[in-house]
Length: 109
Length: 113
Image 1 (cartoon, rainbow over the protein chains, first blue to last red):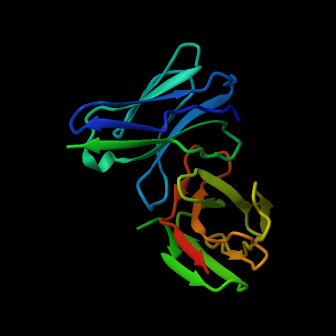
Image 2 (image 1 turned 90 degrees about the vertical axis):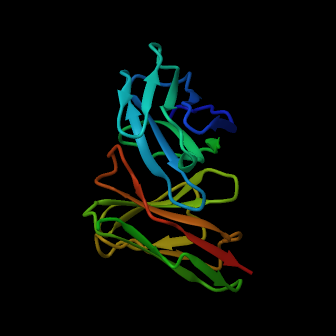
């Protein structure tokens, strides 16, 4: 699996957009970008995934650069309940995901 | 409701004792996984199973054992051979190994003293 680099922590004001970056410069053509989040002392929760195109669902949007070497997870209107650790994972579909340290996002009032 | 259950939420054991962590899912998923998480760290894969009566070692299988006698159940035994067993243990499942989405249980926090 390609390695990913995420900032260890970020903060965001409630109601504003939270933009979480992820670098994956060694990504290969058949590797997908996945995002999960983990609220304190709970199991991780799947958010979104993509290959080349930008993706959007009810939770977030995923923007992947044209060269696929980086991506951004966007929470359009962050709430206090979005405070969590966010994991960016790059993997071939048949591989089991590995979770690094992620980005600790704190949403403040 | 469909989902994954892990019990208990907190577990305390004395050093030298084996302990079994429960993981049950009613999602009809073929694949199940066990991860370990230490404070401030990511998740590390212990064991996974793609189908009943079959399982594979992950990155840190030493000192652990599993069984998969039923599709719904994937218990993890932390043996006395595991040098640092105190951790947060997470069970997950997916429709198949190459599924996009894993579903996680609430976790069991094991403390060994």
